[in-house]
Length: 71
Image 1 (tube, rainbow, N blue to C red):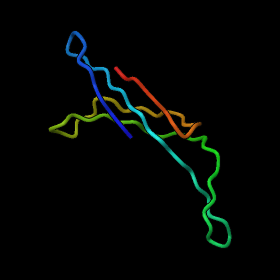
Image 2: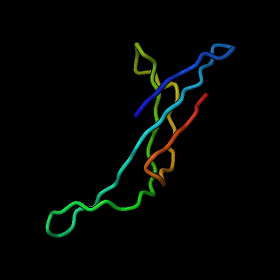
Image 3: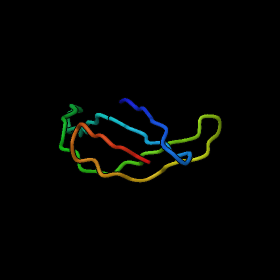
């Protein structure tokens, strides 16, 4: 996972996120097998010195590698 930001005008920021995900299911013998991803996760950005949520939304994940640009 990586994250970076750029300062925009009017005290706004553009945040770039890159994540890699995997999903596994355990069979009856306890072996984990990778399965296709198709689910929702919450992506959140919080203020550095507080728990204030600056961005919090659900995003659908359908591939292992995802990239987002948030403003």
